[in-house]
Image (tube, rainbow, N blue to C red; front, top):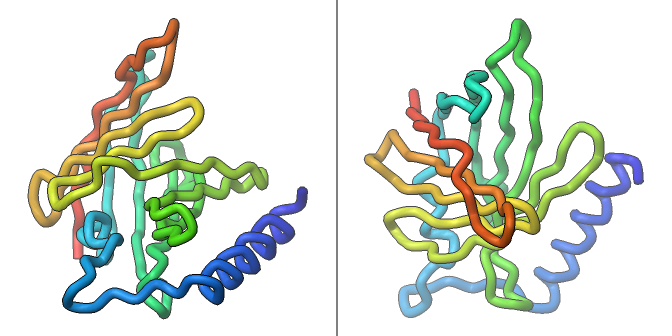
Length: 167
């Protein structure tokens, strides 16, 4: 499927979901996006090393959509000679199943989907089909990201990266 078709389908799906069950957050209802709100703003630079020793160096920008019901982001690889888009994505609350979700859209048109679990003011976990990640807020401008892959029925950590924000 072409990339623009995927984006069009996503826009339509979000619009339909919003019209069926619009999210309303007031003083009595906690904002389900509060656990990811600290990511918004500035430029995040992440550094770590893959199991083969190759460096992970990325740049990420998080920004709210107009309704503040969708946190958008784009992620770039900085480990080579040129800055290259890895994926762009969205984090949103899906009221149809009461879950925080993340969708990553790769330049190839592939889409990775994750459910955000154990989300609170300290961070969150992302559970996908092939990976499990944990984001832990170290401070207002720093977080740790641990990536795990499943092998032989067990989750094995393959990456421990630190992200720092400049504003």
